[in-house]
Image 1 (cartoon, rainbow, N blue to C red):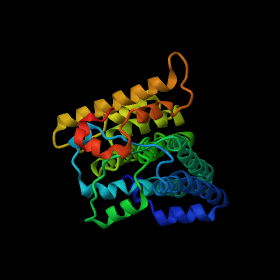
Image 2: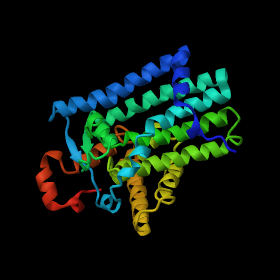
Image 3: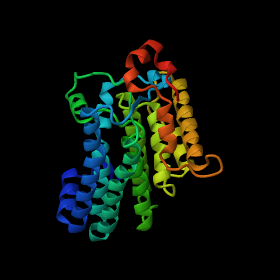
Image 4: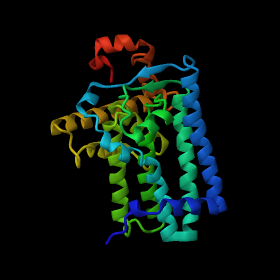
Length: 305
């Protein structure tokens, strides 16, 4: 029977990380980046509003994806999702896996810093249901002020996880041996990305923005062809109530990804001033959050994107 990455022990992975000096150092740096670029920056903006502009980034297609609370467990698994990679490396490579694991953790911290370059200039949000009937949603509302939607760090993290995992195994000469596990992790990234939309933590626009950000962060591991393949597989295993809506969602995400990519690499005929420039331009053309009443009156279909 195939060993699954999802069955790796989280406590053992954490204990291994904290007990090995090189991994512990990388983990502390990663934790610092996550705290400063996600929690501190976001709560500061929530407590001191007005210093950084905030825009609504919903899209009409979001309404075709039903709010489905039972997906919350899949959504909240996104941290354990990448920690289990460390468990897999510990189990199969021991000391040989320390270097790749440390590099993986260090790059995860850099990912948060990279996304923070967009958040420090312009924040974004979506219409999130105030659903508190399940304890896990209490955690979501308490821990996430919901101001960092574009690009979606959740989607960036899971894409990073599956592409890096694949690269690590290939570099160790085990890409073919562990091909089923690579595919398992890729499917997990797709499933979490779908869960993000089902629990209304993000818009379809946020998925496209995250894919673009990942192409700019690690273009060798997530080139345009890989990104479009990823988008083409959303809502195939778990179709939307109307399968044709799934095709609309996939087409929109791909088209917006291409739009960001084109703007980010030729403006015109030269590179944009910064990787995040296309996202900031998109946000500046979206309705400001302080215009909430007008937004509701106009209806969600008026939101650009």
